[in-house]
Image (cartoon, rainbow, N blue to C red; front, side, top):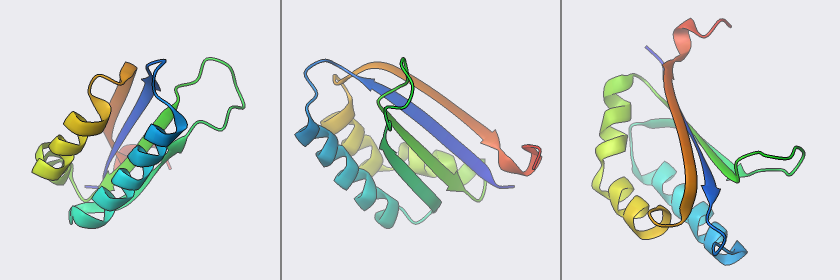
Amino acid sequence: MPFRHVVMFKWTDDVDAAHVETVRAGLDRLGREIGVIRSYVHGSDAGQSDGNYDYAVVADFDDADDWRTYRDHPDHQRFIADHIAGRVAARAAVQFDTASSGR
């Protein structure tokens, strides 16, 4: 069953544009290197509405098992430790089965 993971971050005040670019490049790399990912889109908020999160990632997988493989993948865990942990003021995430998403 198709499965989607969505995560959003609000950066801490000390995160600058250079770090956000490092995150973007790193996520691009993860999207290519972790084979269970079917679709991987991410980016900074477009600034069209106050109060939004700063950055979002949307990842699609064939099923929840593939998402768990991604979640626990050593490259993904290393990326979180090196570039996300300690730099996030708030995080929100959700995973859901897209086959029942009301298309």
